[in-house]
Image (cartoon, rainbow, N blue to C red; front, side, top):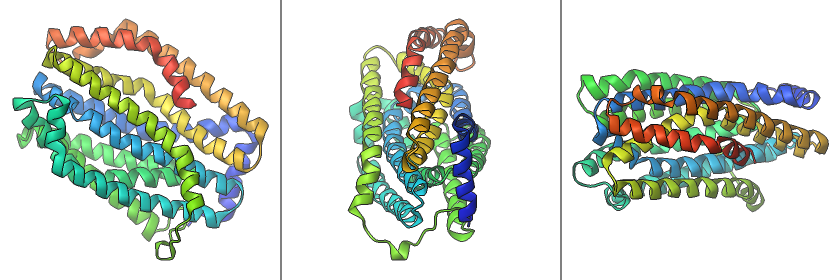
Amino acid sequence: MIADGENTSRLNIFLENPAKGLWTLALPIMAGMGVHTLYTVVDMLFIGRLGGESIAAVAYNMPLFFFVMGLTFGLGSGVTASIARFIGEDDKVSADNSAEHAIAMAAVISMILTTLGLLYGESILSILGAKDSILTLSWNYLRFICYGLPCMIFSGFFRSILSGEGDMKLPMIVTALGTVLNIILDPIFIFVLNFGVRGAAMATTISQVVVFLIFVFMLFVKERSYIQFKLRDFSYSKLILIDITKVGLPASISMVIMSFGQLVFNRILTDFSVDAVAAYQIGGRIDMLIFLPIMSIAAALTTLVGMFYGAKEWIKMKSIIKYGITRSVMITFVGSTLMIIFSPWIIKSFSSDPEIQGIAVYYLRCISLIYPLVAIGMSI
């Protein structure tokens, strides 16, 4: 277990130099998320070799996947902010209890979403617009993803707990290991074992289980954290639940709305062609590369603002908010420029179909114009 003195020292460092503290937190997050983003890009490179229908089959799953991630990361940000504030107030008992509430929330969300996915997943995909052979491919993918869904959700909350205490290194390492494993398994299950799209889901599920087991071992067996889990002594606290949801629920709702937006886009594009759905999916994966640094800065801001708020350092809190937002805008401005110029060459790596290439390039050149606005929204 990390000693109290180490965590206090970390808080003092952040207070002395907030800008340095932001990058100290953001860069490990960026590295960890970068490996995960690399997986999604490589995953699409592999699936792209299977053709437009396979890409579209995965595309119909993305709104559902984003919905789950929205709940997990949104409520997780509430957990991060709650734990960081309690640590800033030097209230370790409440910080521990907040983490225990996060575990309980993960259990409830996992049970509900996994059950709904396995019972109604195929019907939901049909409503979203998947038809005939694409519906079969989509359901094969979703069914195996559901098997690993609880591990994915719990791992997300574990990362949020560690982020709340300012430990970004462990989540980065664990996420990196899981992603590397996923990248290794992808071609084996997709091509060698000839499972196709279903193989991509199998690789993801196995990787998520491994990541979950590593987190459990490090947090509950090795006790490699400042936070202590005393689940047998768990005591429900309405105040802590409110503390988590008042930050996490708005964040979740915003991401759920974005998920609904993806759903609507897919449904509209279905009326045009499978190629349009596939092109939108490829473009979305490339978007993630641009959003990676601003999501990392936003996650670091969540921790720092929580700590500064708890320590009542109002001037430094406002300063780091302004610093984080301006840096995010600068980064996305560069990203927008690169997408406008180089998108034709980037898209060729994902698909050899001229129709898919043309639609994807047009999408990227349009959407890149609002990257700086997205940066502001994510940071806030």
